[in-house]
Length: 128
Image (cartoon, rainbow, N blue to C red):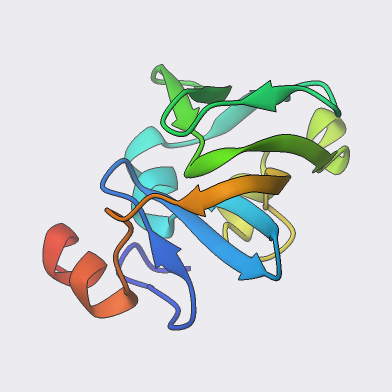
């Protein structure tokens, strides 16, 4: 995974989350750029399934060998699913940020943030 990898078909936040929208369900992860900046992820503090979140609020935190980082909700919703594999294997966020390293699935109760970008705009933001 290169730091410059930015798959098309996803939406991106300035705070380096990616979103895959399928109907009213949004799968959320962090970008390759973000995981590269954080370095090795050692713990993912996943939210409880069923928790409701407001758009822009902290959804969960990631702990790396370097720092602790918040991951923000791209829209209002209810946590429908969490990636339980990350409890035992937080390194999946580094190894496959757009695949097995996804974080949470939200059942949206409103629109996604209008500030989300397409892949080209995110590449420009990150210099990729």
